[in-house]
Structures are given as C-alpha cells and as structure tokens.
Length: 271
Image (cartoon, rainbow, N blue to C red; front, side, top):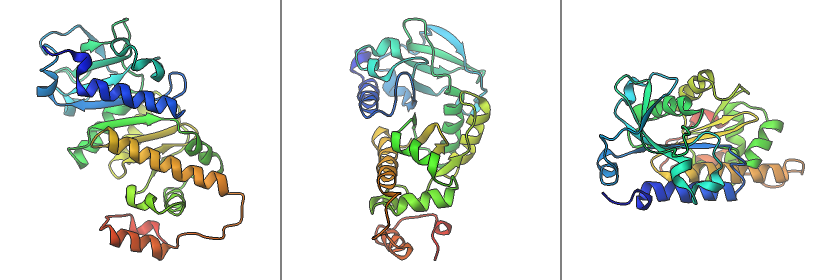
C-alpha cells in the first residue's frame, strides 16, 4: 500500500484547511469539509476491508451507501490538520444500512466526524442529483460575508444582485446566485434539510449570522466560489456607508453573461 499521508486527497485537505484558517474563515474549531473520494484511488492507500470502527451518522443516507468521504473531525482546529492529519481527519464509508459510517482511517485519538455530517450528506445527495461531478461540500465563517448578513436584507435576489454589482467577476463566478437561510440552530437535521433543499438550486448557501456552505467539483472550484463571495462582501462592507458614484448596471451584468455564455438567474436582474 502507498503511504496514506502522501495521498493527493489528504494533502489537499491539509493545504486547504490551513489556508482557510490563515484567512480567518475557520476560527477555533469552526467550519468543516467533506470530500467524496474515488474508491479505486482510496484502495491504493487503504485496505477497504479493514474497518477500524463504526460510528452512527444520525441520518439515513441510502443514496450514499458505499460512498467514501474524507471528513474533518468534530472539535478539531483547522490550524492543526496539516501537522496531524491522522487525528484531525477521517476517511469513512457509508455502510449498507445507510445510517452508519465505517471508519477506514483517521480520528486516531478516538474522535469522530464533524457534528454537521448529516447536513453535509444531505447536501451531497442534493448536489450529486444536479451534477454528479460535485464532490466537495465546504462550510466556513468568512468575516465580511458574516458581517453583511447583519446589515443587508437577507433575500436571495437582493443579496445576490448586490454582490454581483460589487465587482465584475461576481456574476461570472457564481451566475446561479446565492441561496439564503434565516438564522437556525446549527448541528441539527433541520438546518441540514433546509440547506440541502437550497443546494438543489444553488452551489452557495448563506447561513445568516453563521457562515456559508459551498459545493463544487473540486477544492479549487469550491474554495474559489466562497473566496469570490467573500471578496464581493468585503467591497460592500467597505463602501456601504459611502455614496455610490459607480456601479455595474443590470444591463452590464446581462452583457457579462452573454460574453461568457453563462446560465444565470435572469429573474435576479431588474430588466
């Protein structure tokens, strides 16, 4: 077997979580990531018949039976992952009952996956039904995005349109817009179900006064989606109290979608 610590998916989780912590998106043990892996690739590094232990997931995910994920651990600090991945990450497989995770590697100190795993699994099911290539679910707490939820109307059209107008790249990167949820208690199946419903239409879902959920094909795409929202939110928060001299008109946003041949939320523009 190859060294699991050299596996591209482990190294990618380590690099991404370290970068997210450095940016301040994942303070303390805030935030979580789950990454759907290719079984054949995992088999190069692990004996898939060797189940270390089983852990109830708190959610029945029949659609994901047999699927393998690498997932950040509950109570784990993102800043520690790159230095000690075996304690802070775990590779799990959804068991045949759909309600149990089989631990194949990691959580070596007796830990377990993030408390928001049910929300992740629900979102994976939603995104895979829309795009089978969407393998990443990423949750974090970016500063300016969070701040914006305190002062901006939390309406999907209004929030998306505001962020589209902050900079040219916004509508190009997330033409499908943003889903929005009101404040809800985290770590519950209720917020997971609400997020998963939004994920049928959006790759990005804002949790008011909490953070953001993103989904994508790979780490780069998912990180880039959140990064662009955060940059646009920063522009808004830096200028919201000032008179607007320049802005991108709705006609200009439409022209961008035509230039880049984008499928966008046409009902989010006032044309």
